[in-house]
Image (cartoon, rainbow, N blue to C red; front, side, top):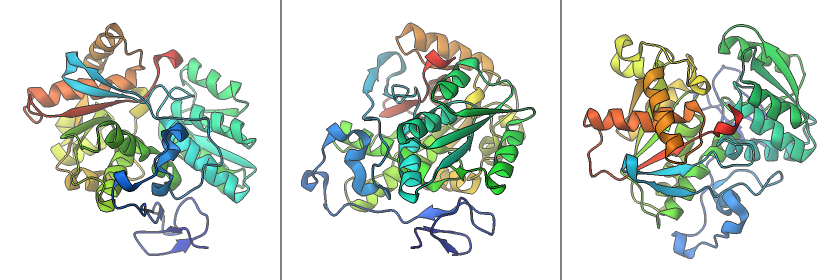
Length: 358
């Protein structure tokens, strides 16, 4: 069985978290037999697993996740996809249900993950659901609410001093030392198969029409690339006929995509508020750039002041989200000010994490 392949060198594997050449691995994208959604048997009582024909894994581990609400946000002249309403409080549950389902298929006994919080909470939650042991490597200064969510699911928490990259290095060393199966939200391709379901839900909720643009937070790219893969799969299946522009929102000072696209000055600054996307070296950096180019998209860097101002506006409008969430609607304002998004463009903004874990 060779379920995974390397796009760079062509190697194939039954189960591995990265290629021997060092590149991330991919699965073969399944497509539904139905030529259109009208011909498909979609049972939305199954949550995001209603779209199982687009997924390369069966639903062995699920908490009934999704579909999440899509609501009007008049103050932003957009629609908000409320992906902070999942069981563990973030969109990362999309990836976790797929990754832990794959782990269960393989008979894995222990998973490990590195995370600044939300991915760790999601993996710990779904590991608890599956009865699989779990350890999560986190930054030493991670927010207490997120650690509590991980610990209360029964997972071991390994605190690591230093940068976010140091946390990953420590976790990878543990994986390579045989301490568990790497359920990484950055490396494991099945995680992205799960996050792609946001696009399927959006299309269904909108009567199979695609918005002009989708604005999303962008760190490792789990939501951004998931949306790209999902909208691409819908188009390839013939269920939709276009792709939205994908517009990323990065944290100033942690904005490698912005720096690549627009130069060092455009990425400079400081953003301590959006801790969930403080990633300087995304694993799938080339793929993110490819998604931006393929959709005529873009990326922008936001500082702490803009994010905190937007967070206050979101809370006052009834959207109790975490600070990292606020980068996307803040970015929408900036894109409109720069006239990269027209006043009459049809826009969806992804809200990624709950304020209850702050």
